[in-house]
Image 1 (cartoon, rainbow over the protein chains, first blue to last red):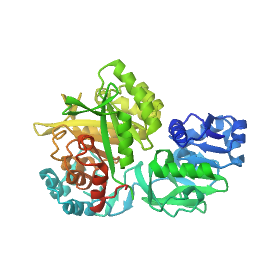
Image 2 (tube, helix red, strand yellow):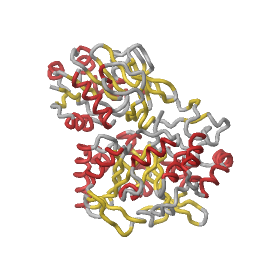
Image 3 (cartoon, rainbow over the protein chains, first blue to last red):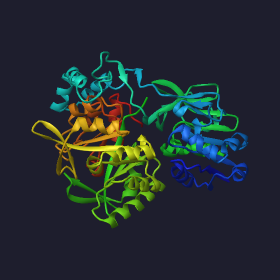
Image 4 (cartoon, each protein chain N blue to C red):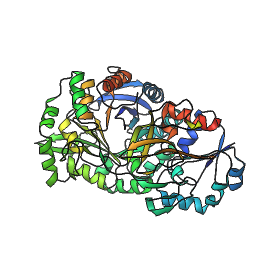
Amino acid sequence: MIAVVDYATGNLRSVANALRRAGAEFTLTADAALLRRAERVILPGVGEASSAMARLRERGLDEVLPTLTCPVLGICIGMQLLCLSSEEGDAECLGLFPTRVRRLPSDAESGAGTEAGIRAVEEIGGSPSAGCLLAAETFPAVGGLLAGGPLPAGGGGLAGESPTHLRLKIPHVGWDTIEELRSPLFEGVPEQSYVYYVHSYAADPCPATIATTDYGRRFSAALQRDNFFGTQFHPEKSGAVGARILQNFLNL
Amino acid sequence: MLAKRIIPCLDIRDGQTVKGIHFEGLRRVGDPVELGAKYAAQGADELVYLDISATQQGRRTFTDLVTRIAARIDIPFTVGGGISSVEDAGRLLEAGADKVTVNSAAVRNPALIDAIAARYGSQFVVAAIDARLVDGRRVVTTHGGTRPTDRELFTWAHECVERGAGEILFTSMDHDGTKNGYPCEVFARLAELPVPIIASGGAGTVAHIAEVLTRGGADAALAASIFHYDEIPIPTLKRELHRAGIPVRL
């Protein structure tokens, strides 16, 4: 039996739907006895770390989870709660993974997007609309307007001093690549596969890291220690790649 | 590297997919769940379902539809249309939506954005903004572009982010349905905001989409009719964008 830990957090339904699509039987529960008898435990999570941690404690699950011997998978906040601590709400977590969760940086050195993109439009051979040509010519002017206008200037890539200094959007939302894969969790999943992320905090790389992603800095896309697994991304929303990762977890 | 997202948009009335040109002359284009599943299989990165039902019965049908979509679709999807309270947003979250868009109701009652973000997180709230050019000023409009307000686009977009919107979905009503391209200079300004920008309204060619994702600085491009009528199949679009060096998920 698969137990999905029900501690009043966001994406229970998404995880439940993904398990149904995989043809797996499961139960939603916060009952310690049921969790101890389960063959697989999934700890989902969306929201804020310290309040999620508080909800685990209210249910006594902070005592139960570390004692489980079956494969356990934490997803997103669920993974973060298995780390040592999180900067979000200054939360002490369960300490199963030897790493800390820190806020993602909003600045990074990267040339992605701008120059390559403008070349891209030319290669496609489209006829850029007048509006776009105008914008390309007046990017510095846009920046100037912004400095005194209602929008934050923020050193954006298009208008900032250095063309290669891009301001990263936080939260990190969307499809990003995973690499340095090393775990049975990624059986049959190629390096550089895309998975779906929605988060503002991430765990630093550590010896338990089994996959990484770069966004401003390199972070743990997934973690494993003994029978405990965690993914920062959402396998339940990551299409065929995500379904494979969930199936791998069920097959462990 | 974070991929630029391609997002088909499905307009739903009374549980069926429709697409209007300038929100008029509605025409059916297929079953919402089947169409969404087809797009997901073709490589869509996300789906947006907008409820344009005018009746209570239509609204209830939409919630049931969201439940069916969530059961079937394994990529993120956003729902919107007529969300005017935290309860409306909560009902759609319960049904399985990953995000909601708020539009007219947020213009009328901006605190709605704060309330939904506080309850369910910023990642759950997308501020959808429609605007058109009136006497050289970009004026926010409501009710499908029909009602101008006294709000200015950039000021309102900034306020939405301050209040907790996690993404901005912008449609230029002057471009929507024209297939002449996006107003990239407007998107380049919106791109200065610290949240992802979804570009909507005006795509007619692959080059238009490439432009808004590069010169326009948008993080995602949303379109409807070019996908519904197979004018630009998603696999073709993504291959072309990839070939041109734009990061996309293949």
